[in-house]
Length: 595
Ligand SMILES: *[C@@H]1O[C@H](CO)[C@@H](O)[C@H](O)[C@H]1NC(C)=O
Ligand SMILES: *[C@@H]1O[C@H](CO)[C@@H](O)[C@H](O)[C@H]1NC(C)=O
Ligand SMILES: *[C@@H]1O[C@H](CO)[C@@H](O)[C@H](O)[C@H]1NC(C)=O
Ligand SMILES: *[C@@H]1O[C@H](CO)[C@@H](O)[C@H](O)[C@H]1NC(C)=O
Ligand SMILES: *[C@@H]1O[C@H](CO)[C@@H](O)[C@H](O)[C@H]1NC(C)=O
Ligand SMILES: *[C@@H]1O[C@H](CO)[C@@H](O)[C@H](O)[C@H]1NC(C)=O
Ligand SMILES: *[C@@H]1O[C@H](CO)[C@@H](O)[C@H](O)[C@H]1NC(C)=O
Image (cartoon, rainbow, N blue to C red; front, side, top):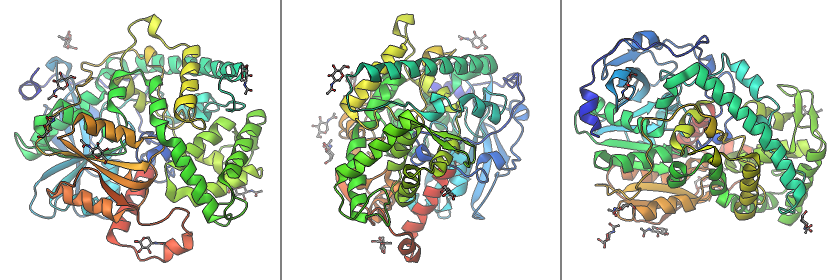
């Protein structure tokens, strides 16, 4: 099906009714999961989209325009007074396969080139659910990574941020928070011990929690169906690729190449892009790779075992570095050089105690209690962000000593948005029949497999950061679901960036994408921990990416070291002269935290 000709032949249609029985509202996309940082995202409410005073054009006006129209908007914020920013919405066909369905609007924030322009680079911060608009607004120094001769286009994918319609199922942010509060969705899965994965006690504990989980997911999906109706059909990744294609010709002219930079879920969007439209692609960088083949071809409850494939390896590195740093910087150790097994046993004992007796946290931002499932989940989230290890181990040590306030605050500062499901339930294969519906017993089985085969500590712990599941209840299918092949030939090889120790998007997924496109991609390996390369500063990685966008492809298998060790003394860090690379990474990290 030729999209390009179809898209441009579209006629405008009657304004599309905003699909909501509830008052529309805008809330921050706080829980972003598979995002380079948003996996470990705790936006301060004062900086989230929630509080932004927006003067974005009203969606009812947007829907009157023809596809291809660009409507300027005042950028919702410009925290660095970047003079080279502009914002707007592009009117796109809602459904590229049926022109009578009407239009949608895709919001963008653009950092304009300051040198003679070579083209546009579309960026995506992951999630799904992350706002590319906010990433562009909050990271002017991206120019120092991608280059001043490019327009850098942050856009909000379908359903997300300022793009309309947005996936909004609950009538308010508070209603959504209440829905999730103190459930397995918010607290994760608690088990009394992971020592014996054949234990029937463990299996029973899982089944009980997955029963609650499925009931919540069914409730959420039915609510979304009622509120959003057919609008939910258009939130999938394939549709977002069509939007990039459409926007690229509007921004850069017919036949212009699509250039791309994306991390985490953004690697999924990148893999779809290069494989759906290989002849349209110019430069593409994907970082923190999630396995696109599994994403597109397996139901979402099968994904986590894959994601945590290198979680144990990362945990070992964390424990080693903690032991080397000693209690001043890593207070969950008792002395410098303590055997890592002892530190690990201390944490396990803490999780097991919490499983029996949750810890009351009366003075947290939201008073409540800390569960074992939440504490273990948070540890996995901390592993994704080495720059947080000093602070995180202080919070863990406080909790072990009986004060769970800081940990609980990390948990409740996360959102619980349904925008992610809007994407994943369109992308993952729909169950063919009731027979294929995963039962609570099936979910327990899969959880045990993840413990046994991938990560004994974290196989059950992706639920808070990666709240997938229940797609069997999702009310609609998309107009298009891309399922491969994944072996496209590109004019210019794609750059794949993987860390050696990424606890949620393992290097093996990067190598998989590389092996499927051996002549059309190269691997850049950053030797260090964390989720996505920007988890740690590596001047070498930044220079390699910058060179790539100026046409220099690194040799496959190039290894970049990280500049600094983990568990850095905060005073020492503060006293260090900041290079441009260091400032760019810091700004990126802060932006990723907050969107
Ligand atoms: C296209 O969309 C219109 C309006 O929603 C619908 O009535 C029609 O059945 C659709 N056509 C196809 C081929 O799906
Ligand atoms: C693990 O649990 C199973 C089933 O409850 C039991 O038969 C087995 O003895 C246990 N193994 C260990 C090492 O405790
Ligand atoms: C508990 O921890 C919080 C967060 O670190 C801290 O603000 C508070 O003072 C601590 N409370 C006590 C009693 O130590
Ligand atoms: C790509 O993979 C598909 C499906 O596996 C196969 O049919 C096709 O021949 C492959 N194309 C190339 C260029 O290798
Ligand atoms: C890759 O390139 C090599 C050398 O040119 C060639 O032998 C091989 O068939 C190519 N592989 C694919 C999958 O295109
Ligand atoms: C690229 O380099 C990686 C790391 O050395 C290696 O594992 C992979 O096989 C290489 N890919 C190809 C296509 O040769
Ligand atoms: C981090 O690495 C950079 C580059 O190697 C170095 O200049 C800086 O002093 C290091 N910072 C700290 C706090 O060690």
